[in-house]
Image (cartoon, rainbow over all chains, first blue to last red; front, side, top):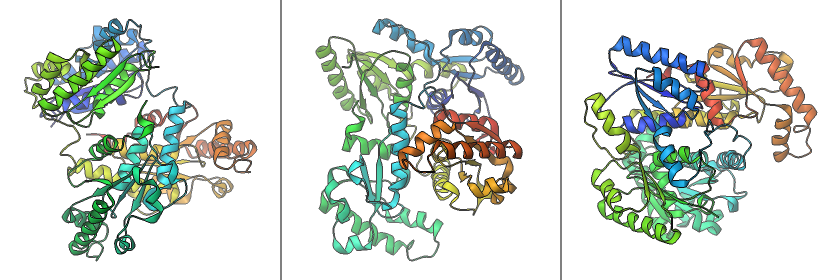
Length: 273
Length: 273
Protein backbone atom coordinates (compact mmCIF):
# COMPACT_ATOMS: atom_id res chain seq x y z
CA UNK A 1 0.00 0.00 0.00
CA UNK A 2 1.25 3.45 -0.84
CA UNK A 3 1.14 6.04 1.90
CA UNK A 4 1.24 9.13 -0.29
CA UNK A 5 0.76 10.18 -3.85
CA UNK A 6 3.54 12.12 -5.51
CA UNK A 7 3.09 14.15 -8.70
CA UNK A 8 5.82 15.25 -11.10
CA UNK A 9 4.58 18.23 -13.08
CA UNK A 10 6.62 19.72 -15.89
CA UNK A 11 6.08 21.72 -19.05
CA UNK A 12 8.67 19.50 -20.76
CA UNK A 13 9.45 15.79 -20.50
CA UNK A 14 9.40 15.78 -16.70
CA UNK A 15 12.78 14.08 -16.53
CA UNK A 16 14.31 16.86 -14.45
CA UNK A 17 11.26 16.92 -12.18
CA UNK A 18 11.56 13.17 -11.63
CA UNK A 19 15.30 13.24 -10.98
CA UNK A 20 14.85 16.12 -8.57
CA UNK A 21 11.88 14.56 -6.80
CA UNK A 22 13.24 11.03 -6.59
CA UNK A 23 16.52 12.25 -5.11
CA UNK A 24 14.61 13.99 -2.35
CA UNK A 25 12.15 11.13 -1.79
CA UNK A 26 15.10 8.72 -1.46
CA UNK A 27 15.78 10.43 1.87
CA UNK A 28 12.59 8.98 3.32
CA UNK A 29 11.29 5.53 4.19
CA UNK A 30 8.27 5.85 1.98
CA UNK A 31 6.76 3.93 -0.89
CA UNK A 32 4.65 6.56 -2.59
CA UNK A 33 2.51 6.18 -5.68
CA UNK A 34 4.12 8.22 -8.45
CA UNK A 35 2.09 10.04 -11.10
CA UNK A 36 3.55 12.00 -13.97
CA UNK A 37 2.17 15.04 -15.78
CA UNK A 38 4.68 15.88 -18.51
CA UNK A 39 4.06 18.47 -21.25
CA UNK A 40 1.84 20.58 -18.95
CA UNK A 41 2.44 23.67 -21.05
CA UNK A 42 -0.86 25.54 -21.11
CA UNK A 43 -3.13 27.08 -18.48
CA UNK A 44 -5.88 24.64 -19.52
CA UNK A 45 -3.68 21.61 -18.95
CA UNK A 46 -2.60 23.08 -15.61
CA UNK A 47 -6.24 23.33 -14.50
CA UNK A 48 -6.70 19.67 -15.42
CA UNK A 49 -3.66 18.68 -13.37
CA UNK A 50 -4.93 20.74 -10.41
CA UNK A 51 -8.29 18.99 -10.57
CA UNK A 52 -6.54 15.62 -10.55
CA UNK A 53 -4.30 16.57 -7.60
CA UNK A 54 -7.22 17.95 -5.61
CA UNK A 55 -9.26 14.84 -6.29
CA UNK A 56 -6.39 12.75 -4.89
CA UNK A 57 -6.14 15.05 -1.85
CA UNK A 58 -9.87 14.65 -1.08
CA UNK A 59 -9.80 10.91 -1.64
CA UNK A 60 -6.72 10.22 0.48
CA UNK A 61 -7.20 12.85 3.13
CA UNK A 62 -3.56 13.94 2.92
CA UNK A 63 -1.67 16.41 0.78
CA UNK A 64 -0.15 14.96 -2.37
CA UNK A 65 3.51 15.96 -2.78
CA UNK A 66 3.93 17.92 -6.03
CA UNK A 67 7.39 18.37 -7.57
CA UNK A 68 7.38 20.94 -10.33
CA UNK A 69 9.89 22.29 -12.81
CA UNK A 70 7.44 24.64 -14.51
CA UNK A 71 9.08 27.64 -16.11
CA UNK A 72 5.97 29.21 -17.57
CA UNK A 73 4.84 31.55 -14.79
CA UNK A 74 1.20 31.55 -15.86
CA UNK A 75 1.06 27.77 -15.72
CA UNK A 76 2.87 27.70 -12.37
CA UNK A 77 0.43 30.27 -10.97
CA UNK A 78 -2.50 27.95 -11.64
CA UNK A 79 -0.87 25.34 -9.40
CA UNK A 80 0.21 27.81 -6.76
CA UNK A 81 -3.27 29.23 -6.44
CA UNK A 82 -5.51 26.21 -6.88
CA UNK A 83 -3.63 23.13 -5.81
CA UNK A 84 -4.23 21.38 -2.49
CA UNK A 85 -0.94 19.51 -2.68
CA UNK A 86 2.38 20.46 -1.12
CA UNK A 87 4.19 22.29 -3.91
CA UNK A 88 7.98 21.81 -4.13
CA UNK A 89 8.94 24.14 -6.91
CA UNK A 90 12.51 23.83 -8.12
CA UNK A 91 12.64 26.74 -10.52
CA UNK A 92 10.77 29.30 -8.46
CA UNK A 93 12.97 28.49 -5.50
CA UNK A 94 16.36 28.77 -7.15
CA UNK A 95 16.00 30.75 -10.37
CA UNK A 96 14.98 34.02 -8.72
CA UNK A 97 17.88 34.27 -6.25
CA UNK A 98 20.18 33.38 -9.12
CA UNK A 99 18.77 36.19 -11.26
CA UNK A 100 19.81 38.58 -8.49
CA UNK A 101 23.30 37.16 -8.15
CA UNK A 102 23.97 37.01 -11.88
CA UNK A 103 22.20 40.30 -12.58
CA UNK A 104 20.58 38.51 -15.48
CA UNK A 105 16.97 37.82 -16.37
CA UNK A 106 16.12 34.16 -16.88
CA UNK A 107 14.37 33.50 -20.17
CA UNK A 108 11.72 31.09 -18.86
CA UNK A 109 12.36 28.77 -21.72
CA UNK A 110 10.39 25.55 -21.51
CA UNK A 111 12.03 22.18 -21.80
CA UNK A 112 15.70 21.50 -21.45
CA UNK A 113 15.32 18.72 -24.01
CA UNK A 114 13.32 20.50 -26.68
CA UNK A 115 14.84 22.37 -29.60
CA UNK A 116 18.09 20.56 -28.98
CA UNK A 117 17.57 17.76 -31.45
CA UNK A 118 19.65 19.53 -34.09
CA UNK A 119 22.21 21.12 -31.81
CA UNK A 120 25.88 20.16 -32.02
CA UNK A 121 25.84 18.75 -28.50
CA UNK A 122 22.89 16.54 -29.34
CA UNK A 123 24.26 15.16 -32.59
CA UNK A 124 27.58 14.52 -30.81
CA UNK A 125 25.71 12.47 -28.26
CA UNK A 126 23.92 10.39 -30.90
CA UNK A 127 27.26 9.89 -32.63
CA UNK A 128 28.79 8.77 -29.33
CA UNK A 129 26.00 6.19 -28.84
CA UNK A 130 26.56 4.84 -32.34
CA UNK A 131 30.31 4.73 -31.76
CA UNK A 132 29.90 2.84 -28.50
CA UNK A 133 27.57 0.31 -30.10
CA UNK A 134 29.96 -0.23 -33.01
CA UNK A 135 32.87 -0.67 -30.59
CA UNK A 136 31.08 -2.93 -28.12
CA UNK A 137 32.93 -6.07 -27.08
CA UNK A 138 35.95 -5.42 -29.30
CA UNK A 139 33.80 -5.56 -32.45
CA UNK A 140 35.89 -3.06 -34.34
CA UNK A 141 39.45 -1.75 -34.17
CA UNK A 142 38.58 1.03 -36.58
CA UNK A 143 38.71 4.58 -35.26
CA UNK A 144 39.90 3.55 -31.81
CA UNK A 145 42.01 6.70 -32.05
CA UNK A 146 38.71 8.60 -31.92
CA UNK A 147 37.61 6.98 -28.65
CA UNK A 148 37.51 9.07 -25.48
CA UNK A 149 37.61 6.01 -23.23
CA UNK A 150 38.43 2.34 -23.79
CA UNK A 151 37.26 -0.10 -21.12
CA UNK A 152 38.87 -3.50 -20.72
CA UNK A 153 37.92 -6.46 -18.53
CA UNK A 154 36.79 -10.08 -18.59
CA UNK A 155 33.43 -10.98 -20.08
CA UNK A 156 30.49 -9.76 -17.89
CA UNK A 157 32.53 -7.42 -15.71
CA UNK A 158 30.19 -4.50 -16.53
CA UNK A 159 31.85 -2.98 -19.61
CA UNK A 160 28.85 -2.73 -21.95
CA UNK A 161 26.37 -0.94 -19.67
CA UNK A 162 29.14 1.43 -18.55
CA UNK A 163 30.20 2.37 -22.09
CA UNK A 164 26.58 2.95 -23.12
CA UNK A 165 26.03 5.09 -20.04
CA UNK A 166 29.13 7.18 -20.75
CA UNK A 167 27.87 7.75 -24.30
CA UNK A 168 24.25 8.46 -23.40
CA UNK A 169 24.82 10.61 -20.32
CA UNK A 170 28.11 12.34 -21.12
CA UNK A 171 28.34 12.13 -24.92
CA UNK A 172 31.66 10.28 -24.72
CA UNK A 173 32.82 7.86 -27.38
CA UNK A 174 33.43 4.82 -25.23
CA UNK A 175 34.76 1.56 -26.66
CA UNK A 176 35.06 -1.69 -24.76
CA UNK A 177 37.33 -4.62 -25.25
CA UNK A 178 37.16 -8.04 -23.65
CA UNK A 179 40.21 -9.67 -22.08
CA UNK A 180 40.38 -13.27 -23.31
CA UNK A 181 42.64 -16.33 -22.79
CA UNK A 182 44.97 -15.30 -25.64
CA UNK A 183 45.71 -12.04 -23.84
CA UNK A 184 46.40 -13.95 -20.62
CA UNK A 185 48.86 -16.25 -22.40
CA UNK A 186 50.60 -13.28 -23.96
CA UNK A 187 50.60 -11.57 -20.52
CA UNK A 188 49.88 -8.29 -22.25
CA UNK A 189 46.99 -6.00 -23.09
CA UNK A 190 45.50 -6.65 -26.55
CA UNK A 191 48.04 -5.29 -29.08
CA UNK A 192 45.38 -3.23 -30.90
CA UNK A 193 45.00 -1.14 -27.74
CA UNK A 194 48.64 -0.42 -27.01
CA UNK A 195 48.75 2.97 -28.77
CA UNK A 196 45.88 4.23 -26.62
CA UNK A 197 47.10 3.33 -23.15
CA UNK A 198 46.15 6.72 -21.67
CA UNK A 199 42.51 6.21 -22.50
CA UNK A 200 42.28 2.67 -21.14
CA UNK A 201 40.45 1.90 -17.92
CA UNK A 202 40.09 -1.61 -16.48
CA UNK A 203 37.03 -3.14 -14.82
CA UNK A 204 37.29 -6.13 -12.54
CA UNK A 205 34.78 -7.98 -10.35
CA UNK A 206 34.86 -10.56 -7.59
CA UNK A 207 35.04 -14.14 -8.95
CA UNK A 208 32.01 -15.14 -6.86
CA UNK A 209 29.79 -12.39 -8.28
CA UNK A 210 31.10 -13.03 -11.80
CA UNK A 211 30.25 -16.71 -11.51
CA UNK A 212 26.72 -15.79 -10.38
CA UNK A 213 26.20 -13.43 -13.32
CA UNK A 214 27.59 -15.86 -15.88
CA UNK A 215 25.52 -18.71 -14.44
CA UNK A 216 22.32 -16.83 -15.26
CA UNK A 217 23.30 -16.94 -18.92
CA UNK A 218 25.04 -20.29 -19.14
CA UNK A 219 24.31 -22.44 -16.12
CA UNK A 220 26.72 -25.30 -15.33
CA UNK A 221 29.20 -24.21 -17.99
CA UNK A 222 32.95 -24.11 -17.61
CA UNK A 223 32.65 -20.41 -18.57
CA UNK A 224 30.53 -19.75 -15.45
CA UNK A 225 32.36 -22.06 -13.06
CA UNK A 226 33.85 -20.45 -9.98
CA UNK A 227 37.21 -22.04 -10.76
CA UNK A 228 37.37 -20.52 -14.24
CA UNK A 229 36.11 -17.13 -13.01
CA UNK A 230 38.84 -17.11 -10.33
CA UNK A 231 41.48 -17.83 -12.94
CA UNK A 232 40.26 -15.18 -15.39
CA UNK A 233 39.91 -12.48 -12.74
CA UNK A 234 43.34 -13.27 -11.33
CA UNK A 235 44.96 -13.11 -14.77
CA UNK A 236 43.12 -9.93 -15.72
CA UNK A 237 44.05 -8.15 -12.49
CA UNK A 238 47.72 -9.18 -12.79
CA UNK A 239 47.75 -7.85 -16.32
CA UNK A 240 46.18 -4.53 -15.35
CA UNK A 241 48.65 -4.11 -12.50
CA UNK A 242 51.61 -4.94 -14.74
CA UNK A 243 50.55 -2.66 -17.55
CA UNK A 244 50.03 0.25 -15.16
CA UNK A 245 46.51 1.12 -16.29
CA UNK A 246 43.93 2.40 -13.82
CA UNK A 247 41.17 0.02 -12.79
CA UNK A 248 38.42 -0.59 -10.25
CA UNK A 249 36.17 -3.37 -9.03
CA UNK A 250 32.53 -3.16 -10.11
CA UNK A 251 31.31 -5.78 -7.61
CA UNK A 252 29.31 -3.43 -5.37
CA UNK A 253 29.10 -0.39 -7.63
CA UNK A 254 26.32 0.97 -9.80
CA UNK A 255 26.89 2.05 -13.40
CA UNK A 256 26.66 5.68 -12.28
CA UNK A 257 29.39 5.23 -9.67
CA UNK A 258 31.67 3.34 -12.06
CA UNK A 259 31.22 6.02 -14.73
CA UNK A 260 31.87 8.87 -12.30
CA UNK A 261 35.06 7.24 -11.02
CA UNK A 262 36.33 6.66 -14.56
CA UNK A 263 35.69 10.31 -15.47
CA UNK A 264 37.51 11.52 -12.36
CA UNK A 265 40.52 9.37 -13.20
CA UNK A 266 40.76 9.78 -16.96
CA UNK A 267 39.54 13.39 -17.21
CA UNK A 268 38.69 13.04 -20.90
CA UNK A 269 39.27 16.23 -22.86
CA UNK A 270 35.80 16.31 -24.34
CA UNK A 271 34.24 16.83 -20.88
CA UNK A 272 36.18 19.98 -20.07
CA UNK A 273 33.83 22.70 -21.23
CA UNK B 1 35.37 32.98 -22.28
CA UNK B 2 33.36 31.82 -19.32
CA UNK B 3 31.68 34.43 -17.20
CA UNK B 4 31.20 32.37 -14.06
CA UNK B 5 32.43 29.20 -12.47
CA UNK B 6 29.85 26.68 -11.34
CA UNK B 7 30.56 23.87 -8.90
CA UNK B 8 28.56 20.68 -8.45
CA UNK B 9 29.24 19.28 -4.99
CA UNK B 10 27.85 15.93 -3.91
CA UNK B 11 28.66 13.18 -1.46
CA UNK B 12 27.73 10.66 -4.16
CA UNK B 13 28.27 10.61 -7.92
CA UNK B 14 27.08 14.18 -8.41
CA UNK B 15 24.65 13.15 -11.12
CA UNK B 16 21.64 14.57 -9.29
CA UNK B 17 23.57 17.77 -8.51
CA UNK B 18 24.45 18.17 -12.19
CA UNK B 19 20.92 17.45 -13.43
CA UNK B 20 19.54 19.88 -10.89
CA UNK B 21 22.12 22.57 -11.62
CA UNK B 22 22.07 22.27 -15.39
CA UNK B 23 18.28 22.51 -15.50
CA UNK B 24 18.46 25.79 -13.59
CA UNK B 25 21.42 27.15 -15.57
CA UNK B 26 19.57 26.41 -18.81
CA UNK B 27 17.28 29.30 -17.86
CA UNK B 28 20.11 31.79 -18.35
CA UNK B 29 22.17 33.02 -21.27
CA UNK B 30 25.44 32.04 -19.71
CA UNK B 31 28.39 29.87 -20.65
CA UNK B 32 29.85 29.00 -17.28
CA UNK B 33 32.87 26.85 -16.54
CA UNK B 34 31.66 23.68 -14.81
CA UNK B 35 33.67 21.95 -12.11
CA UNK B 36 32.65 18.76 -10.37
CA UNK B 37 33.38 17.58 -6.85
CA UNK B 38 31.77 14.15 -6.53
CA UNK B 39 32.29 11.82 -3.55
CA UNK B 40 32.73 14.75 -1.13
CA UNK B 41 31.81 12.58 1.82
CA UNK B 42 34.10 13.69 4.65
CA UNK B 43 34.71 16.96 6.50
CA UNK B 44 38.31 16.92 5.23
CA UNK B 45 37.25 16.67 1.60
CA UNK B 46 34.69 19.43 2.21
CA UNK B 47 37.44 21.75 3.49
CA UNK B 48 39.43 21.03 0.33
CA UNK B 49 36.44 21.88 -1.86
CA UNK B 50 35.86 25.11 0.11
CA UNK B 51 39.49 26.13 -0.42
CA UNK B 52 39.12 25.53 -4.14
CA UNK B 53 35.85 27.48 -4.36
CA UNK B 54 37.28 30.40 -2.38
CA UNK B 55 40.39 30.45 -4.54
CA UNK B 56 38.15 30.74 -7.60
CA UNK B 57 36.13 33.51 -5.92
CA UNK B 58 39.29 35.54 -5.18
CA UNK B 59 40.71 34.98 -8.64
CA UNK B 60 37.57 35.87 -10.56
CA UNK B 61 36.21 38.55 -8.27
CA UNK B 62 32.70 37.07 -8.41
CA UNK B 63 30.87 34.44 -6.43
CA UNK B 64 31.06 30.94 -7.88
CA UNK B 65 27.63 29.27 -8.08
CA UNK B 66 27.64 26.11 -5.98
CA UNK B 67 24.96 23.46 -6.48
CA UNK B 68 24.95 20.88 -3.71
CA UNK B 69 23.07 17.70 -2.96
CA UNK B 70 24.95 16.96 0.26
CA UNK B 71 22.97 14.90 2.73
CA UNK B 72 25.64 14.64 5.41
CA UNK B 73 24.91 17.65 7.61
CA UNK B 74 28.46 17.94 8.94
CA UNK B 75 29.85 18.08 5.43
CA UNK B 76 27.20 20.58 4.33
CA UNK B 77 27.98 22.76 7.36
CA UNK B 78 31.61 23.15 6.22
CA UNK B 79 30.36 24.64 2.97
CA UNK B 80 27.67 26.77 4.60
CA UNK B 81 30.13 28.30 7.02
CA UNK B 82 33.30 28.66 4.97
CA UNK B 83 32.39 28.98 1.35
CA UNK B 84 32.44 32.30 -0.51
CA UNK B 85 30.27 30.94 -3.32
CA UNK B 86 26.52 31.25 -3.72
CA UNK B 87 25.19 28.03 -2.24
CA UNK B 88 22.11 26.50 -3.90
CA UNK B 89 21.34 23.57 -1.66
CA UNK B 90 18.72 21.18 -2.96
CA UNK B 91 18.36 18.90 0.04
CA UNK B 92 18.43 21.51 2.78
CA UNK B 93 15.83 23.51 0.92
CA UNK B 94 13.30 20.77 0.30
CA UNK B 95 13.96 17.91 2.70
CA UNK B 96 13.17 19.83 5.86
CA UNK B 97 9.72 21.12 4.83
CA UNK B 98 8.96 17.62 3.61
CA UNK B 99 9.91 16.14 7.00
CA UNK B 100 7.25 18.39 8.53
CA UNK B 101 4.56 17.46 6.03
CA UNK B 102 5.25 13.73 6.15
CA UNK B 103 5.88 13.72 9.90
CA UNK B 104 8.89 11.55 9.11
CA UNK B 105 12.59 11.99 9.75
CA UNK B 106 14.78 11.79 6.66
CA UNK B 107 17.60 9.30 7.03
CA UNK B 108 20.34 11.43 5.46
CA UNK B 109 21.53 8.51 3.44
CA UNK B 110 24.30 9.37 1.04
CA UNK B 111 24.15 8.53 -2.63
CA UNK B 112 21.07 7.54 -4.51
CA UNK B 113 23.23 5.29 -6.67
CA UNK B 114 25.26 3.48 -4.02
CA UNK B 115 24.24 0.20 -2.44
CA UNK B 116 21.81 -0.37 -5.25
CA UNK B 117 24.07 -2.49 -7.42
CA UNK B 118 22.49 -5.68 -6.12
CA UNK B 119 18.93 -4.46 -5.73
CA UNK B 120 16.14 -5.95 -7.83
CA UNK B 121 15.51 -2.64 -9.56
CA UNK B 122 19.15 -2.40 -10.56
CA UNK B 123 19.51 -5.92 -11.90
CA UNK B 124 16.25 -5.42 -13.82
CA UNK B 125 17.78 -2.37 -15.42
CA UNK B 126 20.94 -4.19 -16.46
CA UNK B 127 18.76 -6.99 -17.82
CA UNK B 128 16.73 -4.42 -19.77
CA UNK B 129 19.92 -3.00 -21.33
CA UNK B 130 21.05 -6.47 -22.35
CA UNK B 131 17.61 -7.24 -23.76
CA UNK B 132 17.56 -4.04 -25.79
CA UNK B 133 21.03 -4.73 -27.20
CA UNK B 134 20.06 -8.29 -28.13
CA UNK B 135 16.88 -7.03 -29.81
CA UNK B 136 18.42 -4.08 -31.63
CA UNK B 137 17.55 -3.75 -35.30
CA UNK B 138 15.43 -6.90 -35.41
CA UNK B 139 18.40 -9.09 -34.48
CA UNK B 140 16.32 -11.59 -32.58
CA UNK B 141 12.68 -12.70 -32.54
CA UNK B 142 13.24 -14.66 -29.35
CA UNK B 143 11.47 -13.47 -26.24
CA UNK B 144 9.63 -10.65 -28.02
CA UNK B 145 6.77 -11.62 -25.73
CA UNK B 146 8.96 -10.34 -22.88
CA UNK B 147 9.40 -6.89 -24.43
CA UNK B 148 7.71 -3.89 -22.83
CA UNK B 149 7.95 -1.83 -25.99
CA UNK B 150 8.72 -2.63 -29.64
CA UNK B 151 9.70 0.29 -31.87
CA UNK B 152 9.37 0.10 -35.63
CA UNK B 153 10.51 2.49 -38.34
CA UNK B 154 12.78 2.86 -41.35
CA UNK B 155 16.54 2.64 -40.90
CA UNK B 156 17.95 5.72 -39.07
CA UNK B 157 14.64 7.04 -37.81
CA UNK B 158 15.93 7.08 -34.21
CA UNK B 159 14.97 3.61 -32.98
CA UNK B 160 18.27 2.47 -31.46
CA UNK B 161 19.07 5.48 -29.24
CA UNK B 162 15.45 5.54 -28.06
CA UNK B 163 15.35 1.86 -27.11
CA UNK B 164 18.65 2.16 -25.24
CA UNK B 165 17.38 5.23 -23.44
CA UNK B 166 14.15 3.47 -22.41
CA UNK B 167 16.23 0.60 -21.03
CA UNK B 168 18.86 2.70 -19.27
CA UNK B 169 16.58 5.38 -17.82
CA UNK B 170 13.36 3.48 -17.20
CA UNK B 171 14.48 -0.16 -17.00
CA UNK B 172 12.17 -1.13 -19.86
CA UNK B 173 12.87 -4.03 -22.19
CA UNK B 174 12.70 -2.22 -25.49
CA UNK B 175 13.15 -4.01 -28.80
CA UNK B 176 13.40 -2.33 -32.18
CA UNK B 177 12.59 -3.60 -35.62
CA UNK B 178 13.41 -2.02 -38.96
CA UNK B 179 10.81 -1.62 -41.69
CA UNK B 180 12.31 -2.81 -44.96
CA UNK B 181 11.24 -3.12 -48.64
CA UNK B 182 9.77 -6.60 -48.08
CA UNK B 183 7.40 -5.19 -45.51
CA UNK B 184 6.40 -2.41 -47.90
CA UNK B 185 5.63 -4.93 -50.66
CA UNK B 186 3.57 -6.99 -48.26
CA UNK B 187 1.84 -3.79 -47.06
CA UNK B 188 1.90 -5.18 -43.54
CA UNK B 189 3.89 -4.96 -40.35
CA UNK B 190 6.57 -7.67 -40.06
CA UNK B 191 4.71 -10.94 -39.31
CA UNK B 192 6.91 -11.70 -36.26
CA UNK B 193 5.47 -8.61 -34.57
CA UNK B 194 1.79 -9.21 -35.20
CA UNK B 195 1.08 -10.91 -31.84
CA UNK B 196 2.44 -7.88 -29.98
CA UNK B 197 0.55 -5.08 -31.65
CA UNK B 198 -0.29 -3.37 -28.34
CA UNK B 199 3.35 -2.85 -27.51
CA UNK B 200 4.33 -1.49 -30.91
CA UNK B 201 5.15 2.16 -31.43
CA UNK B 202 6.23 3.64 -34.77
CA UNK B 203 8.88 6.27 -35.40
CA UNK B 204 8.96 8.32 -38.55
CA UNK B 205 11.09 11.25 -39.73
CA UNK B 206 11.01 13.83 -42.51
CA UNK B 207 12.55 12.49 -45.75
CA UNK B 208 14.88 15.53 -45.94
CA UNK B 209 16.33 14.96 -42.47
CA UNK B 210 16.57 11.21 -43.08
CA UNK B 211 18.52 11.80 -46.26
CA UNK B 212 20.92 14.10 -44.38
CA UNK B 213 21.51 11.51 -41.64
CA UNK B 214 21.98 8.64 -44.07
CA UNK B 215 24.33 10.72 -46.23
CA UNK B 216 26.75 11.08 -43.34
CA UNK B 217 27.14 7.30 -43.31
CA UNK B 218 26.87 6.48 -47.00
CA UNK B 219 27.24 9.59 -49.15
CA UNK B 220 25.88 9.47 -52.70
CA UNK B 221 24.21 6.11 -52.17
CA UNK B 222 20.75 5.16 -53.34
CA UNK B 223 20.04 4.36 -49.68
CA UNK B 224 20.63 8.01 -48.74
CA UNK B 225 19.06 9.63 -51.80
CA UNK B 226 16.16 11.98 -51.13
CA UNK B 227 14.04 10.07 -53.65
CA UNK B 228 14.51 6.76 -51.86
CA UNK B 229 14.01 8.34 -48.43
CA UNK B 230 10.74 9.88 -49.63
CA UNK B 231 9.54 6.52 -50.85
CA UNK B 232 10.48 4.64 -47.67
CA UNK B 233 8.96 7.24 -45.35
CA UNK B 234 5.77 7.36 -47.40
CA UNK B 235 5.44 3.57 -47.36
CA UNK B 236 6.24 3.32 -43.65
CA UNK B 237 3.73 6.00 -42.69
CA UNK B 238 0.98 4.43 -44.82
CA UNK B 239 1.64 1.11 -43.16
CA UNK B 240 1.53 2.58 -39.65
CA UNK B 241 -1.71 4.36 -40.42
CA UNK B 242 -3.28 1.23 -41.92
CA UNK B 243 -2.24 -1.03 -39.07
CA UNK B 244 -3.58 1.39 -36.47
CA UNK B 245 -0.43 1.56 -34.35
CA UNK B 246 0.56 4.77 -32.59
CA UNK B 247 3.49 6.71 -34.05
CA UNK B 248 5.26 10.05 -34.02
CA UNK B 249 7.83 12.00 -36.03
CA UNK B 250 11.30 12.26 -34.50
CA UNK B 251 12.45 15.03 -36.85
CA UNK B 252 12.65 17.83 -34.29
CA UNK B 253 12.49 15.78 -31.10
CA UNK B 254 15.18 14.73 -28.64
CA UNK B 255 15.49 11.15 -27.38
CA UNK B 256 14.03 12.28 -24.04
CA UNK B 257 10.94 13.76 -25.68
CA UNK B 258 10.41 10.73 -27.90
CA UNK B 259 10.73 8.38 -24.92
CA UNK B 260 8.34 10.42 -22.75
CA UNK B 261 5.71 10.51 -25.49
CA UNK B 262 5.98 6.74 -26.01
CA UNK B 263 5.55 6.12 -22.28
CA UNK B 264 2.51 8.38 -22.14
CA UNK B 265 0.91 6.54 -25.04
CA UNK B 266 1.79 2.94 -24.26
CA UNK B 267 1.65 3.14 -20.44
CA UNK B 268 3.75 -0.03 -20.03
CA UNK B 269 2.77 -2.06 -16.99
CA UNK B 270 6.28 -2.20 -15.60
CA UNK B 271 6.31 1.56 -15.03
CA UNK B 272 3.23 1.62 -12.82
CA UNK B 273 4.70 1.35 -9.36
